Length: 467
Image (tube, one colour):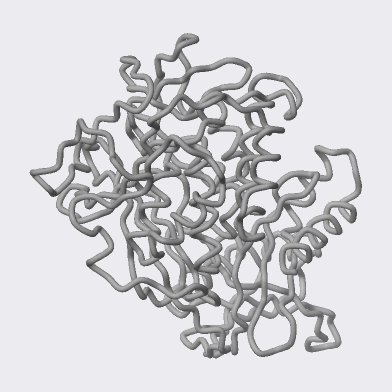
């Protein structure tokens, strides 16, 4: 199982790095599943936490699902599922957040039953993250489980009684982990032999995460990824944070310093973000409908230890955006190089768009109109940029509205790496996908190929995913 971040994680590294991280960031090592439940305590004072669950699948402390109505399958189609990752992410936190949001626990049970594995219980509890009510998920292993390599896990998932979408998502998450481990240990992915990540608890985490996403059918978005720092004591010595496999998984994703000497993102959590998330932003443009909280197990010093999942609706109708201004300046003595520099400077300073158009001025002199589309509150500041970067003596300001086609960002996996795209949607025919040219340029330079090859690969990857 991939326990909630900052668990007492036990890095049982071989060339098959165990990323069921059960280590304490100060170095005390804990094995198995003796998790410190910290702020995710059961609300039922009569429950004996030392006794193993009696049933293969059970809910404890009353019904953790009783506080809200469960979703119907497909309730998230056409909507955005946003992950507020300020406190990090792990596989079990992700599943708990989606169950707390409204995915029926029965969907989790159905997916795990289809694996054909035994010797474990899934325990769902009401929990608290500071003052916030949340849900905590734990996989309790009752019988010894074999270690599995990547090939064995592929075979297990291929023959499991899973929905095709669930199987595909689970395979993609596990493949990301295998590739990350292979990069860390400098071996081929097929040589990666998982220990605890290949054990039943981590398999359950990943399959349940895939099943919850398949059940909802929403597009997944996330806030940038917070990473802690420091070192962790493992069975094979000290390891830096973020853990090596976590860092491999988050390559190409937006990350930031969380300011904590602790592990906030486990490799399983990182693999979910890397393979399932389509776009990253601090907060999406959508209408929130419902939120769910998946609790971790230890109190953090400056924030509640929980992952928040928010389902929201998106208005796909075209929107008329007001409050815009077009800045214009006529110049007849500006070189092409200076005009190009002025455009790039305006864009870098916050202009929504900038351009230059050739004109004929008085006395037949050739000239340019340097223009920029800006938000009204930015008009004066960006007018000063026009005056500074061109030879014009004045700037015209024209109020403007524009009809906007709904758009969003997405990321696709290609043989050249992760490539971001802009997707334009709405009632104007099929969506239009445009790879980010700068990212394609960088990938082409690193791979020693033409930019056209990278552009084609990104569009092909988007087309496959859209199908």
